[in-house]
Image (tube, rainbow over all chains, first blue to last red; front, side):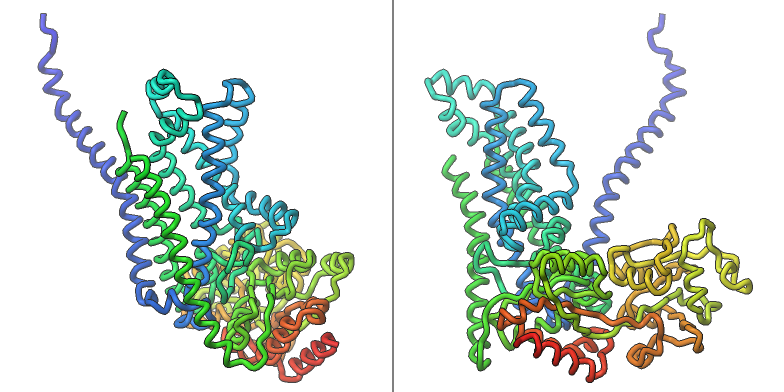
Length: 292
Length: 321
């Protein structure tokens, strides 16, 4: 008895090979599609904006004349925003994640909290803007300051940081913890000396991606009432300020054609800032990743 | 190894701070050098918010003002006429820009919060009705035809519904978003509060409307004169007949008011208390009235008659007492 009917195999082989090639081609197209879109986008922005990207562009404030318009207030404002968002969001996020993963009992209440954090990550950003306006700007009377906007943005990215930190903490192998307990370490010592060092690449990668999101958001800040034109720099967190995406949005909505190019130059600056932050994330992951 | 990680993290944060600090000290130098040029330096903050249509004028004024008074911190927002009034009512802003007069319900709220205000006209804008360049049949529209075009009547609109000799093709509508003062103004003078056609494309960004009109042969839309003026070569403006013959929006017809009813004034509302109590606000408002004409022309709007600015100036002087 023949186990394999060679004639059937011979008949079906070509079509199977063709199908294989077609699918391979399709998947390749799917991969290149994203790259192609990115390429076109980058090309357009570079072609349009590179002419306006000079030292003056970083030195000048916004202006009604496109050739004099600069991004100084917005760039510095974005960095100020990060200085507020980074510690607040990191401390709150990391604290929450450690509590949920290490201390909290596995009961309905904990899973209720976890469910809500995941839900919070899906809330549209403009809702966080309304929350910030009600609580920070009006109730706490922080006005349209760096602090009010920073706290609003911290809330926005908090769920993302919590989830990333939870994942990172959970992926630390059980054996490490048990070994630590076995040596007589307390829970706190185990967390600080064993779990966190092992989880830090994951935590920082997630956090920097979350911060990148905070840098690129516009909607919540518009709702909070962050102004568009500013010709001074904030001296402390209670001063008002403006950020890159808002400045870019304003330039794109101008009637004058030249402002479109200024906007493109602004987008380039924002892109570089984001790429810089993302490469830090990649660097940390590669440099400090330990394998267990 | 652990130390290295914390060192890396500290470097990131520290680096960000260093950049800020470097740029910060830089600006301090700038402002010192220009401060010496002015005779009576003022200080303090001025908060302005409101219409995105008025924004370019206010930005230009703030820019020029801060060249004179570098220690006064002027901030200009962009949240739209309605959004601006909300903050004005809450007492959060000194000036509120508007591309339409204040509404009655906003007035009542202002009275309730005991905020007295003064209305100042800054410039004119002409709402321009625009069609695609290839549209060769629309020679002019009367106000009634305009209303018939834009009001929802439950049917698909074709050009031939307006005038029988026009083609039987479906019209595509492009309108500014319903939050904008531009929409409010159009709603009041043309639609007379009747609903806008449902299939209209709405956008808060007028450049989106411009792109839509450029790419669609059967499109019609409206927006501020500056957006038409910048795209004159690729769009066609429709003259409007208000009973005295068709008038095209131009610098002259908008200024003289001949382009009716779509010439509209742009306003800013000043909180009387701010002018009386804050020296820098009073100074800024005076500067604004004196320079509004020239600067609004520069950013694409049409200046008022000098007499109008004199009237504004008088009102401001009254407030300071």
